[in-house]
Image (cartoon, rainbow over all chains, first blue to last red; front, top):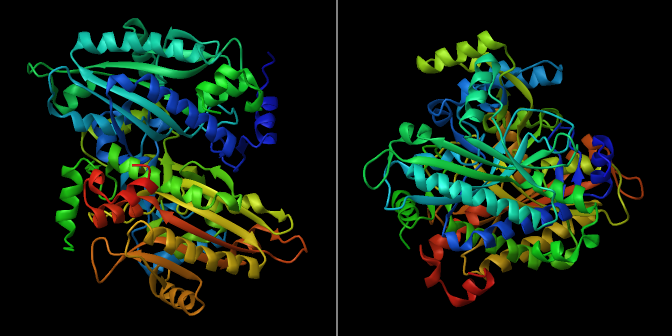
Length: 301
Length: 301
């Protein structure tokens, strides 16, 4: 397998799998790309069918207060997307028009809205768990668009992409057991699609020097795992699925308690749907009609 | 039929169809809501199957330059969503943390990104048409999330929602014929689902006094039609589908030319998927298992 970012990107474009839009990490997706992505998402649903997860869907925006409350701006300010709009009068609107026509910046005439872009598919879910959980906790699944401000021409590094997540809230023991079970299940699922998948302990891209310590602590405590597949490099495989155990981080903030009134624990796992799709394309080729029959069948291609 | 916004909203929440998030016009969608929405989207796909539309998908972000180029900030600045992020150093990041902890605003420490939120599902499509079209023009379909800054507790007025659109680019005659055909087709489709649907000439919510003239001109020239269904009011039915003929507005800006080298014409039609879903719920009740069999069958419920 040859790994070359430009060749891969060009191949994706030439086969109509993606369409450049002028945004780094914001390309359009073609019909075949979408068919693969949907096929994988449905395979995940079938795999998880007996778990009885509650299915929810949230828009790509999240309350600004929620972002502040979970401390996102302390840890990942460089990735945030804050939504601003125009609240002004007619003369200020004319000023915007004049400045856009003169090629000048006009955004200082905007003000903040009550929303930011959703940075992780699970964030809107935690407030819903507030209060006393039923016996055995809860399990929710979502498919949400998320935003990360990290413009890049590398096709697996997107500013805006879809995460299929499962979010488990229960006692520490139940949550860790669930995470461990799904780590193996996800490896089996991805290897069953012919992907060269392996798992590893990982850390989040915390900002700055203080962030380095938080990342090291996360690795020490094995709070984050990723499943990696070579997509744009053999030496630096791409994370296509991740598992985060938050301990009581969210439960404390949102007052989430087990049926026995102890503080609950949360964990989530997320498949990066575009990254899984790109890993399948890199592994099996640009034309899904030529993919191994067993893979095509599982993805309903 | 009784129309009361609060009762309708409460019913939606109590039946788990929607989930409050604290954002006005940004609620979560439950599994049953999503099943209805998907069922309708697939019915649209089956209806349009013989048209041979190219299927594309774009993320909820669009290039800032595109928004400027199409003149969106001149016409609808009050609806725009501009994405800002943090580009600063460690001490500025600490300042954000300190201010969030003190309950102070911190957004003046952000700067603009290269993206804004997609205000209409068709916007990312026009640049793709640039140049000479094939004989007979092109037809594209998308399902994109769009953003409009108009916070409201009225359940059909969302800040973030999905539009299933078709975009036609061809000669004036072909485009108008296509728009007229689809106006009737869409009415038939929606009435076939038991909806009390009617069509009317309409205008966009242009900003300010100059905007009032643009809206009047749009009505005079019959450039916009809507299909309306009573959802929250009998007297003011809700637009659930709209048809826009842009004449050469986009073709001029993006250099889109017919095969005979004349300037092309564009039109689009969009189903507001959440609004169609809410119209179906209002018309047939909160429990889809009790809906008329013919409706359930078409939506694969």
